[in-house]
Length: 321
Image (cartoon, rainbow, N blue to C red):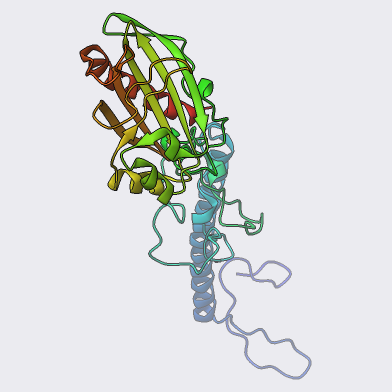
């Protein structure tokens, strides 16, 4: 149907036939090609939407992780940096132990990723801080410092003239003016010291002392009534010499009385004791100072061992001075 101007209204135009030169020809669109193009556009849009959804999900997860890390409690210990693998893919940095790293190192050598949060974060090396100059903090000493040496053994001191240097006098070795023995009072009667040891002995003891180089003989006499006990101390250079005297011992020390008194026990036959301690040989002889001086005296004989023990104690006391 045409209007008054000869144009077609409604409906598709009929195919144009080739006309004479100078007239315009119109081609029909390729509807199949257009449909294929539309289908491809629709598929591309779907793929882009799917990729966009995945990307959005990744961004959302990353944002949630970042927010969680930013809002985490400041009191919670951070993970040990030695077990965190950085985004660059570098292996965890191991602490410097001062030697070759070992894959079987014990937990004390390298931090464990399962360490309790109660552990001090400062115990692990910080990443980027560089290697430690040493193997780590030094350990406390396994044992306490040695205590100061105690005083020397008195017996050791008096076993040699080199260490036994205290003055040697009768008053220094046996200072008591009186002594109580078995309920009786014994009073100091006299004392002496001689460098010729044999003169203060009898019965061959002088020869034994001389063979070991006796330096001097100290004697002190105590009396109680007519009973008398003389203590003798032979001084030698060493314990070995004193032991040698004891091994060959014979005779006895002579009883000592002041000039003008009746002598007693100047020959063998009186009761006596002998022993050694350190470099000394200490002896006693017991008797009576009444006229005759050779009779046995039970009181003096009983007191002899006590005087001997006193002499030993006084000699050991020299080692504590």
